Length: 83
Image (cartoon, rainbow, N blue to C red; front, side):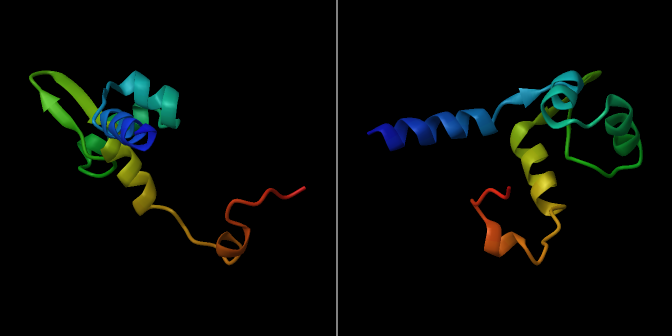
């Protein structure tokens, strides 16, 4: 039962809608970058509702995952801490 609750919470979180400031605070993208990326039609997907610009958390996460660079150490060190 706990796994179902966790999954529902995860789904709810991924469907969360964020404004520019929230994206900046949580993910570190500057507002200037987000605005430039929108103007140039690149960067994370966004929603436009009238004059409002919003981002789905899932779209930000997907954008980051799509731009992840694999390294030779990643598979061996997954889940391990280095000192």
